[in-house]
Image 1 (cartoon, rainbow, N blue to C red):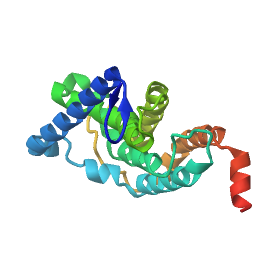
Image 2: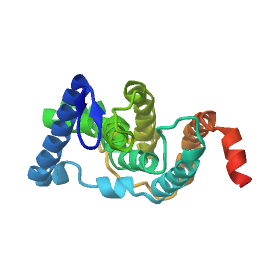
Image 3: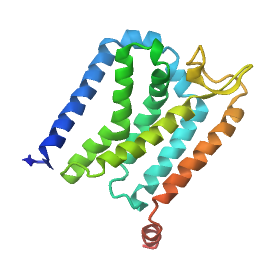
Image 4: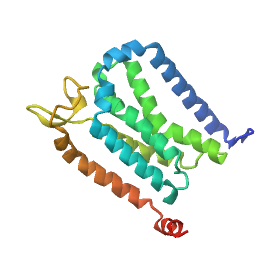
Length: 220
């Protein structure tokens, strides 16, 4: 057991933590050094990501899970890690899913960065926060990778939903030209395809609600 002023951690988890921290730092340095290359390769991503319906959906979902966090059966979920993971997923999942799908025409370094951002959002930010919040590495780290990765993939798919002329509903990364803003008049049609994902996500969140705790807290 390794003990510091802030936390205690097993040697194998300490090694794992050092490895992912270095991976994140290396990715950030790479993104900074190659920022012109990424800006050229993924020109249009900001407009693609901040389409009004996507930002509104993100804001509503993030507000919901942040409010719900104290009322769930998962003690690792609070009003810090819930919006933190949601924000990182919003910013990176659409790009990561597209890069991984288009791997044959994508530089290996870009794929490595996409995987690192995936893990940072779905696992590592959660692990690091709970390590300092609770003083030990979370026992849920492995199960969280699996559960949060499923949600990360769903977010990446939803943000890539698009309506293309002569093709209809599709995932934008499957098209020859990927990062395009939504075509005029297509938002309502896209939202019809988003609805099943929204219902599935809402149902999964409600499963974790501790209804008795919520009732008692409301009655204070």
